[in-house]
Amino acid sequence: MGSLRHGTRLVLLLTMFGPAQGVWVWPAGVAETYGRACLAVVEPVADGRGETISAFQPQSKPGKGKRLTMNLDANGPCVAVVAFFNPRTGKLANRWRPAFVELPLWEARGLPLASLVWKWEEGAEPFECHVLLVARESEDLPPAMTLITAMQDPKADEKLLSLQTTRLREQINKWEAGKDKTGLAARSVPAQFGGVVRGTEEFPWRDHAQKIGFAQVQPGCVIYSYPASPPSPAKH
Image 1 (cartoon, helix red, strand yellow):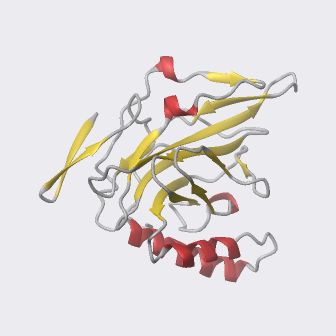
Image 2 (cartoon, rainbow, N blue to C red):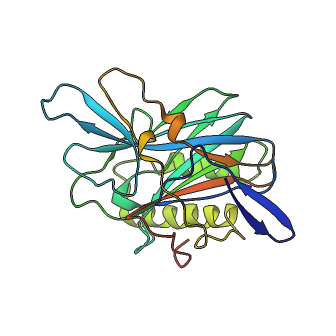
């Protein structure tokens, strides 16, 4: 467990087993409500029989047939918003559409939904994956959800998608306002917690999850980066 002085308050940065390198976490304030998020890498096995699932790590690399998934839950009702941006261009990384999902009390949910696939194959762009937990009471949430829904059209005009991406990035900037995005270098997950699950076994994602505090007035968030480097304040 680490700590960070934020203004005159002491904000505790809580993670399960410590956050992975390439992940920067900051709660939006001291709050009793929190959620958990785990970015995972799904990879087909060499013999073509099934897939393996492992937690995203600093050494994780894109490859043939790989894709990314996100597992989430929370101890209070909220909505999880996930968006991948290319830190160099500010556009959607790999053209991966953003997503959101409602999180009931302690009910696990996964992203992307069936209609989306975050393919992570050779030649993939760098990304910053923003994971935000937003209280349902937030006034900014309904328009953000409407915007994300509108961005799902795979045939969307490039100019329109660019405008929508800018609007979404501006909203995420607002939710993340005032947070130090460069000074939270994280520790490595111990090797014994970096296991791989094959076949139909359930992936123990909670063992690798980032714990994110959130409040009614401010969201909490986590940023996963590839390659592992502090999030760029210039683009977000």
